[in-house]
Length: 139
Image 1 (cartoon, helix red, strand yellow):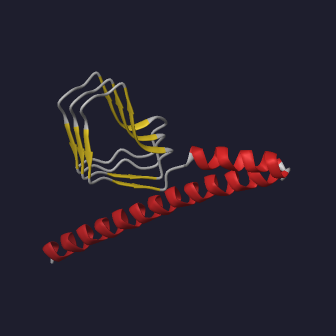
Image 2 (cartoon, rainbow, N blue to C red):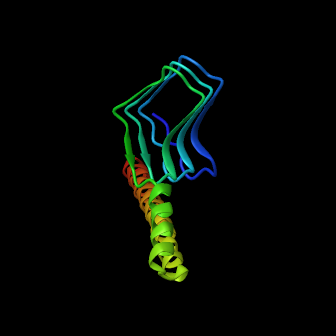
């Protein structure tokens, strides 16, 4: 069980790496949740990929087994391309598209900040519990 969050490229990256088991990991808010590059016959199972541009990406791979993973909140490039085409056809202004993209990016930042706040609060609570236990032992 590992976490690989907020990396510029990949949360998990296999390159020229065969016959691995990638199980029970989280890779969130990266460009790729997992990037399999010229890596064959790997098992990618029971992982969580949230808020990545693309959750799972394979390039030049054969025989990988990818099952029972959670992939959420991908930044859907196809959706963006579709919106651009519609904007062009309907003559809708480009500023509306920019507003949409900025709102999406801000939502992602807010989610990252909320997670960081939650983690800091959990750490503070754990530290408080440790201090209380020390005080009880000293009495």
